[in-house]
Image (cartoon, rainbow, N blue to C red; front, side):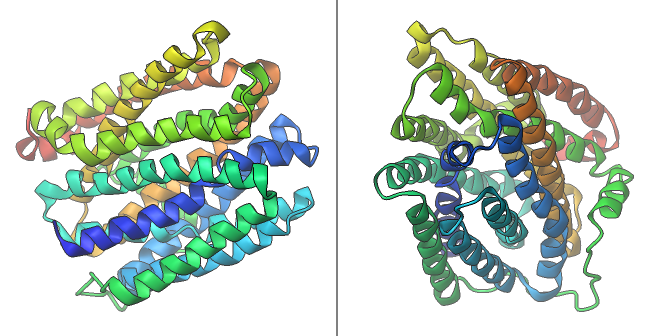
Length: 398
């Protein structure tokens, strides 16, 4: 394996472990600060709003100045936001710290562009699966660590531990990760108009359906992600550490699928079929979460997690691979940045909607997420039988 991919994997893993620390902590801590379920969802939505605004900026910035400096700047901003979180004794400070973290979340966009710089098109789905695997591993270790630190040392040390990880990560990138972009575009315009950029992107037939599929998928998934800690806490009496372990199971499944199986799945079924299978499995995995009886919580949760892990492993790297194949080399950073931007927009809608549905009924976010995810199948069909599918037909197996 390319040494740069190994270093990048470690870098992403450390970064996403720092992110994963907050997943079980923020919803519960926000409620300790007297936030309603709707406001808990809005906290996640505001985090994603800042990602939506800044991600295209980071993507085009990486096309102009290189991937490495963007990764380092993003890590520095994240470190500052985590220190602020450590001092978040009010809801206002908590929300500001999460918004600052969202503004600095350009790391993954630049990392995805880095991978497209150093891998040929036919290997990108497998290489981009490394990001999913790193994300999964971050969810194996991050949430249990966050829950343990929260439970034993208090919320302030959750912020300090994440900040320390960012600083160590920054030092590792500075020391070991070389620049990947050889042909920087010096006159590349820096985009700071996310709404206009999103509308423009939806007019481009190469990417339109892929962006819409990604938006639907992440909306559905984030409805679950922002509310499920409250569900496990309220309806199944899990404590903070047990909630962390549940998130770790989700991460372990994703890491196994995307780290070891995506290449085989792609060769066996083809990318076109993986998009269909992934959408169906994610829909089923999400839909059943809110209807698991207490007596069967563990076995049925494992089934749900397995469906989500396999579906996510089929869908996420395949979408990234298709976007990368359709983009020219000089626009890789911008296109992947726009995909992150649509993902951020979805994470605005998903948590805000999920929090409000949770107030109406604890099972509603998951039933709605499953139904919404089935709607993505129409867009998959349109892409595969439209200009994007025809363009890629000769390069896709199956």
